[in-house]
Length: 176
Image 1 (cartoon, rainbow, N blue to C red):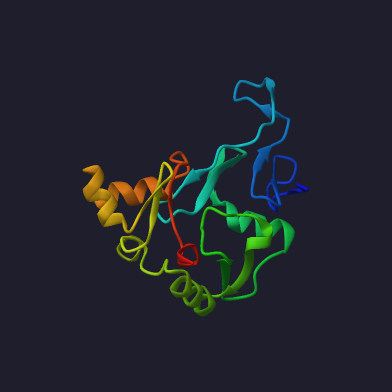
Image 2 (image 1 turned 45 degrees about the horizontal axis):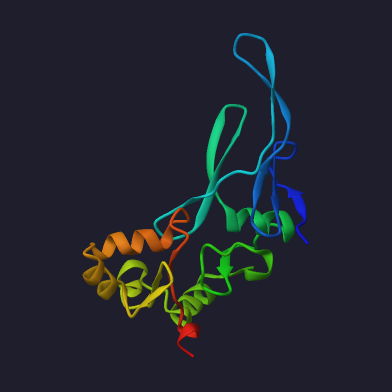
């Protein structure tokens, strides 16, 4: 069941769910010329960074900030991290921002997990990972790029950006 909580620092303006969806809330906005207008709330469309991490742009009092969704989930549902902790994606997929897939951990734990998941090294390591494109499995980014007449960076880009939902990386667990 999806549960919504206010995003710390954005209470009354934005909420995040335990599944990683972000929504704005209905609110009145003061315009520069003295009038107010009603801003109707809606679920925001996340964007993808080159790393594959998802983010949204939040705006309050005219200040716009890009916020990574995995951090927002943990801040709202778990609380602030301890000193020197960062967010870990337990399945190695930076696009999976479900609360059950996230936890605060150390940089060392995060690096150990990225090695175990085969995601360490970003673009260069990912070129050796399986790729699934429109239901077809390719042995690596480089092989997919050759067969599709694309640059490897183009294949990597499409696998890490949400608007290409039918392009994704496989994991070591897919080999079994």
